[in-house]
Image (tube, one colour):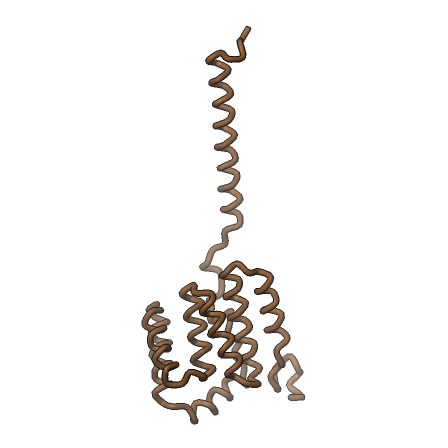
Length: 186
């Protein structure tokens, strides 16, 4: 017969508590592992934000003829730095370009993309909103900007805000001649 305070009972009770704690910790680790997603399979920020269309390409070509060549070169250098993984240099080059023209929607959009890549969610959202405002009636820039806002909100953990932003991206006007309007241009 065992007494409630015997060393063996105390040992068994302590063992049961420790085993339960370890089992719970292992279960949490397994749950966390199941919810983890590989970043390698996810599309890049560029792929998630940019949806190139013929209308966008034509608009870019037309707009670049009127643009300061120094801005175009800084943007090109920034893209090169970004593709090499040097996000700090890309950010610096874009800051320089934005000091020259703080309302250039392309530059603002690129800066939002760099901020997303750096994980600076609030700054990314701010630049994306400025890009949308500076773009005027550009349907492509509207969608791109709202997508960046959605990604920034997702990164910041604001899932409701992200869903609203994804919905706004879908609600942007469709560009004439795209597949969504059957190419009628109406």
